[in-house]
Image 1 (spheres, helix red, strand yellow):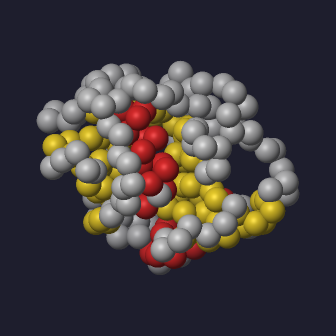
Image 2 (cartoon, helix red, strand yellow; image 1 turned 90 degrees about the vertical axis):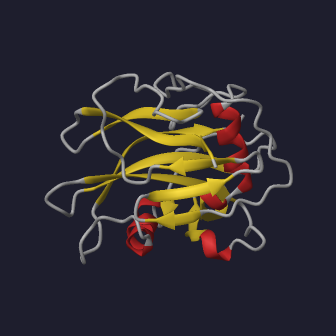
Length: 218
């Protein structure tokens, strides 16, 4: 089980993201740097205990209409070989020392555990509480046995989000800009074989719910 350390981070996760988000094709902000708040999310566990896995919702309030972004991140104690293009940045952790932070869509550990979550083989964990599961993560339809072995993700970003083909003829769609839905829990989107949804808070503290990830046939 991963241990959540409540300690200092230099720079903080949001400071790293403020420089990285504007480089993404799905970023909806203006020419100024985003003003970010952490609005929700959850974690998954790396079975090997080496990689931190977080699905963060970060809200940008720099524009008249705030935008909430899904940012899957992985945290490693050493650089991931061949993943320089996916590096968000590095930070100094008050307990663990230097950590390399990656866009998790490129990380095989995150993708494998996300597929296992959709397949009903693992559970989502609370973002900030050691050992606690996250009951707000919704998986209202599941697919089959997804077990990518020796799989290197090849994500494709576009203005709508990020697509990650899997070895099983399916595609993970990461909904980077979150669109609230009225239903709670949200139904599985039409044509999808699996999905992940969760609530987060808008800048006024109101709960909103959206589909974060869908799994579809390629």
